[in-house]
Image (tube, rainbow, N blue to C red; front, top):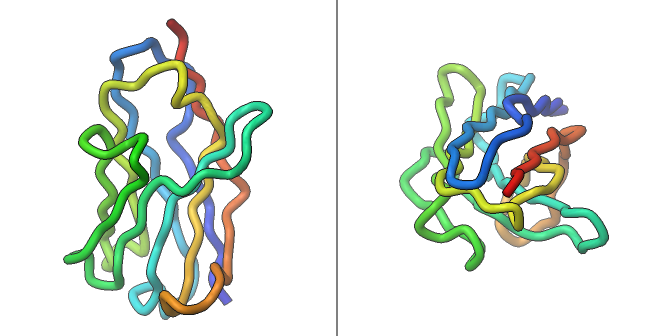
Length: 119
């Protein structure tokens, strides 16, 4: 079992930066691929970023490439999402999720943290 708790959301202005954290419980955190997703008001859930178990491979959704960076610290059981050059279109609830392999669905989800970007 892995429990995920996101933090770091808030209200910021366009152009600002924000770093989200996702703290995981469980001794097997470093075996999981970790992802970030978001869901804006009236929108479908959108893939944001993915990082592999040791952090040497990442991928990003097209809308955040070049602005967001995913990273992880396995010693702290935490994955991060550094968000720069935020725009109002980035307003959403951000979720972290864990999957054991790339061929399976995400096994665990956090409760989400709200990010609101004002213009």
